[in-house]
Amino acid sequence: MSHTTSASTPVAVVTGASSGIGAATARALAAVGYDVVLGARRVDKLERIAAECGGRAIPLDVTDDDSVAAFAAQVERCDVLVNNAGGALGTDSVAEADLDDWQWMYDVNVLGTLRVTQALLSKLVDSGDGQVITIGSIAAREPYKGGAGYNAAKHAVAALTRVLRLELLGQPVRVCEIDPGMVHTDFSLVRFKGDQAKADAVYEGVEPLTAEDVADTVSWVATRPPHVNIDQILMLARDQTSAQVVHRREA
Ligand code: NAP
Image (cartoon, rainbow, N blue to C red; front, side):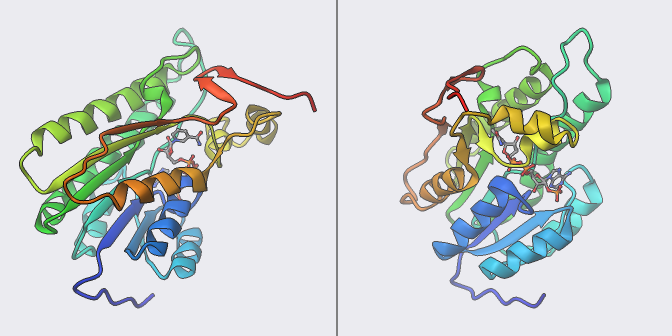
């Protein structure tokens, strides 16, 4: 796809923009005037969403050094980086935890965020008003049964994000962590490895957040004046008060 970026139009990079929160965020940032660069592995979906919001789709696997380097080489300017690519695999207890699931969660959520942030940091500084907005999770704040692998990964993402904020103090880059609770996306389908019935049960009788709700928050954070750093946001549906306390209506 051909795309030209004018020198004055700010550029937002969104990882994991092929579905869910990332796709909604790409649309929301385009709507408030950003040239959006969308990265993910499923290029067909990515291109469809990029076409909808006038953005640029670039293949990206955040777990692969070469893929991240090739992606970053095609991004000339970066004003906002939304580290969104991520997810959970499994709900096993610690006693029965699957090491491969843990490895995947650590690689995509933690090392993926690290790789992309490192690759784009000098461009964020050069923009003169850069922002790193990382999608964490309530799982970063509250451990829950069956959540250890995802809890560990998102706690690590939170640590990375908060240390980055400390280390960038004095530089023209803001850092924000947005921690959503339950959001209705493909997240649970991925977590339950394609089991649609189990994924549907997560949202049964509940009105969860939508991807657009989180995207709206990303857009609000991105559009605060340059001297305002929104450090951390925990956002939950009215039907959820903590990781596993959810109000369900009878069908
Ligand atoms: P989703 O619809 O499954 O989206 C996940 C996105 O991550 C997809 O676009 C996927 O794209 C991308 N991704 C996965 N592995 C990747 C890789 N190796 N390289 C590049 N991109 C990759 O789920 P979602 O709910 O929107 O999740 C977005 C973020 O929100 C995640 O970090 C998740 O942990 C977090 N979150 C979700 C919830 C929730 O309840 N839904 C709550 C709190 C936090 P490809 O498969 O095309 O690569």
